[in-house]
Length: 227
Length: 260
Image 1: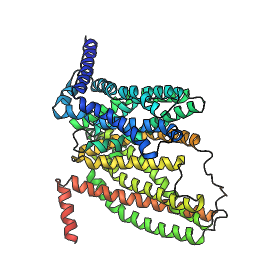
Image 2: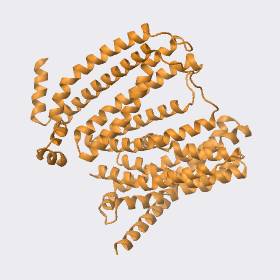
Image 3: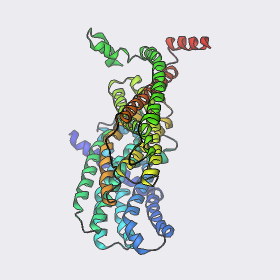
Image 4: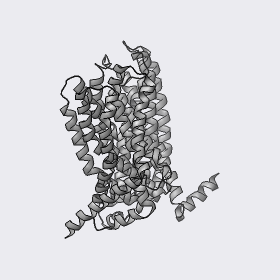
């Protein structure tokens, strides 16, 4: 009985977060447009030398994806905290860790997943080969969940603070350096016809580990705030 | 606090372990130790610098520019040890719910950040004459830079939260998450480095002269003493600030005012 209700609670939280994200379209898609815009700024700053752009494109796309996710994180718990929903969620029969897991999966769907779907188009602008685009796509698919999961810790630690935006990036970006490195190394390896699967496996490992440990850390961070 | 009282009720040796977990006991112990650590920090620093700068022989390869290691290496060691210590005391605070452990953790952060900055700065000053450049994106330099960012994240989170108790807990949690990530960051930076650059600059390490080694050892102890002195001072100030409602703090404060 409890297992059924737990699954139901999680599903309804997931649906609620997705619905809220769609209703607040300008906010949610603001992060996506930010991603597209910042990626397009680089050719303007560095010149249109196609060889240079080809070389730096994976790095640019990854860094901009990181920044876009950071931008969207401040809303993850803050609205629920302001209107008191977060306290109700913490009191729910369902463990807070599971609820956070559902919320983070929803967050990934309205940020990471969309970034992922847009990235091949941006990669074409940088004249990446189709093989590289494929690897970039897979690397983003495997890496972006860990951005949402690790980022959620920063969102939880800064809940209720006035200027949480810059602070989240300060706390979380150093912890995301492994994702950035592995993600770009995979594409570099694919470019030079080297074995790239090892980096993808490591990205999977990082995402799986963070999906397990981040909700635990996140829940204890939220309990500190709500205490 | 419940754990501590439970431990104290047992008439066993473990009582001693928690005696100084009581802020009032710790305060007076630290107050006695602080002057000792300051004096030893100054004496050892002067002795180590005299030995290192005047008596240690000139390096065959690097000339006199190597002498910055007497500051650089101890600072780099301290920067790493202090991050682990900060996370350790944060974990102790969370496990035992001991406010003194949180205070130790929070007090370590600034000293750790300063040590990391000194290590990076002196590293740049050393890199210019020996490598010909202020900075290389070498694995060790990059990880030290990331360590500085981790310290800055901890400090800014601690300062952003107004409630002192919540700030201490949240920052401690961040330090624990950081310390789990440090090995992952280090190894990923290492792979990145070996793939993006060719062989990075390596030292032509000649065996160290015994006076060099002695000077470095003395400087390391000087840095430890300085660290203990600053951390204990900061913990004591935090205790006076956060426990100002208690009688013993009021008495201590009036004693300090009376001395002036």
